[in-house]
Length: 162
Image 1 (cartoon, helix red, strand yellow):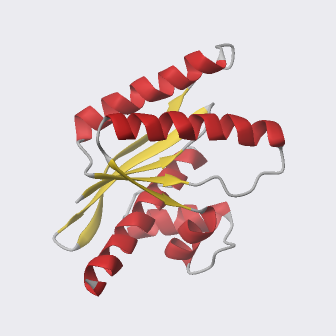
Image 2 (cartoon, helix red, strand yellow):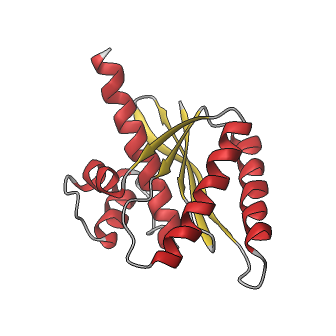
């Protein structure tokens, strides 16, 4: 099973492709989509969608895990992130990729066993679990990897239950 993990954002959308091979979690590819600040909202959302389509076409994930918007202090930021998440969900649906969503609390719990873990703890666990040589950068990329790992671990549990 190949999973696309996504941490949505208007300026930076993190993405990661991970899979289970021979019972092990393996990174396939990861990175981020950056949009230019001077562009209009609709241009930035279109750029996210188009770049995401290319990633889907190249890596052919069977499922996608997207971080849910859970809590924001800044109302302006939450609207922009919600718009980016909407563009991501629409693109995934159009490309017929099955979608799953997880809250930041669920993601942190899955990686660190503590739902209120700091970003640095999540990055360190991501590096450790996937045996990466360095911490993934930027934070959005590390978060996308964490979302995909959370989903693969959740899927393993669901498969065991079945």
